Structures are given as structure tokens and as C-alpha cells.
Length: 398
Ligand code: CTP
Image (cartoon, rainbow, N blue to C red; front, top):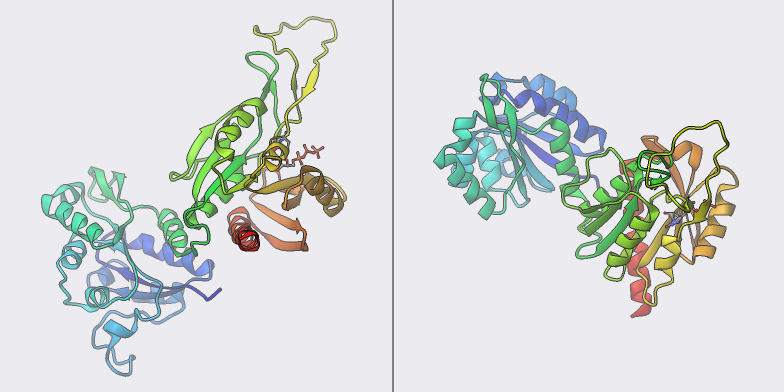
């Protein structure tokens, strides 16, 4: 995939300090960042800082002679995937909404061929001001993506709306904006996290799945343009806002939720660590301790993935196999038994609860190992792979 390139515009607000961290995150992700600063921005953060972090010369002036034909206002954004303005002051929003171009950044914006994203940052009264709200509405109508702002403590000591999003939130929004839309218009159903099988009203059987892999896949599928239904067991993670979330506890409830959505799904990704057994007769009252032995009778849970794969017109089904030994052999056996086209194999002791993962993809074409990476990165690569396999199958059928 071609290396992504953005122009990062910085305007004059105290939140400019967050743009330094943003550049670091973008560069770390392999994105090329060309920084352009307004004169006022240079009063808040230095060109030297931004140059060191981006690894590229910073531009501030329309007449910069480093661009041979003196067309910095045009050249710098050609070939860019987006211009991202962080922070965007009230003045910048007003200028851009009205097509004014009196410095390098505003001129680049009006001469751009690529999308524009802006993260406003200002005092709450400035944000609420009717003129600012009018300008923001106009920018949205013009197709500009406005990131935030959030509500909270402000540099002026007041509290309210207008605080800029954190660098990491802006990074995630930009990274997601730049993802190829492999799954535009597709419906992806995902199960994630553990299940909890009640023994009595306060106790139960569960496992150590954190839900991180499933939630990362949900986010990656959304970023790829899909509509996502996320059926999640009990986890303590923030779900992606754009997903339709169904929280469940037991495998039986997870099965019910999946049954409702499976027929309309194009792709089903079973990431959940579903308990294989449940208590035959959970007690309605809390079980009291006695000195006698306690026997719990377990009965098998339905296999959700195998049920979906056996539908007359199943969605493209992807399973996860967590094994503690003979990884590829056991995972492939599981793939054949559950009759799914693609199985993602990982070592249980390696993957459960961790922030990164190493997986092997098994399908009719053989095995394909993805090198160790963070779960969000594995999720992005996996979604791209699934999209290719899915459209390959569709094309074969039609
Ligand atoms: N799965 C499921 N419903 C179940 C059990 C598993 O949908 N009741 C799905 C999981 O979400 C995963 C895949 O099947 O995608 C494999 O899960 P795993 O627990 O490894 O397989 P099991 O069939 O339970 O095999 P075992 O525990 O014996 O290894």
C-alpha cells in the first residue's frame, strides 16, 4: 500500500502543544507528515520541535524560496491524502468557511484537492458564539470533517465545550479516515469477549478473554466502511461509537443475539471465547458454604460459529482458534469441523489479555502468518485479508 501523506496545519492556540504528540503518533504509524504553521502558531510551539518530530522541513510562509516555483500554497498539498488542522482556532474556521486566503495555511486549504479535517480548540464562549457555530455548520456543508471539540477544563480556567480532543483521539480519527474502504456497505457481525455462565446470582464460570482482539476488529471493520454489529460478553472496554453494540452475559444470550443478526450479515467473525459448558441448573439463591462436597453439573453450550456456518446461505464465516499446542494442526482441524472458510489461529497463552498478538490465517489456500503486532494492527491486516477473500468468493459465485 502507498505510504499515506498528510499536511498538518497548526494555528495559534494553546492546544498547539498537543500537535507535537499527534505528529509523533502519525509518524510512528508510517504516515508522512508535512507541517505547515501559521505565524501565531509559532508563538505557541517552535518550528524546530515540529521539524524534529516530523523529520521534514516546516513551512510557515507563502514566499518560501525552498519551493522552486514559489507555489508553496499549491505544491505542499498536491499528492496529500488530507489536510488536518490541529488546533483550528475560531479565526481559522471563520476564514475557511468564507473562503479567505491570506496566509500559507488558509491558501493551501482553498487550493486543496484532498479532504480537510479540523480539530477546533477555543474558549467555550468563542465556541458557542453564533458566528462560530454558523461557520462550523457551513464547513460541514462544504464537506469538512470537524473532529470534536470536547467538553472539559480550559486553559483560561473556565470549564465547558471547546477543549480540543486529545492527540491520541485525533490520531485515531485520522488513521481511520485514511483506511481504504474495503468493506463499504457490508454488514459485519462480530462476537467478542468471554461469556459468563452463572452458578448462582453472584458466582459464575468465565475465562480470561479481554475482548481486545474482537473490539479492535470491530473498529477496523468500521474504518473499512462496514456497518458493524458487535455482540459482546462482559468486558471493560470502550466500544467503538459507530458499532451497534449488544451486551450479553451467557453463551445462550450470545447465541440468541447472533441468531437475530446472522442472516442479514455479509461476514461473521467469531472472536468470542465462548464457554463450552454451562451449569445445568443454576441456583436462584446464593449457594451457602457447608462442609460437604459440592458437585456442579455442566451441559454443553451450542456452537454459535458452527450454527452460523451451517445456515443455507451463510455469511462469510471467520473463526478464531486459541490453542495451547500443535497450533496449525488443531486450528485446521477446527476449521474443517466447523466448516468455515477461514480460521485465525493463535496461541492461547500468548493472546489472552495481551495487547499484541501473533496469528496464522488458515484457509483453502494454505497458511499465512502475520508477524507479531499490536491487536489494532493485526485487526487492520485481518480485515483487509477477509475483504479480499470475501470479494474473491463473491466473484467466483457470480
Ligand atoms: N465458538 C462458538 N461457539 C462456541 C464455541 C466456540 O462460536 N460454543 C467459536 C469461537 O468464537 C471461535 C471458534 O468457535 O471462533 C473456536 O473456538 P474454540 O473455543 O477454540 O473452539 P471449541 O470448538 O470450543 O474447541 P476447544 O475449546 O475444544 O478447543
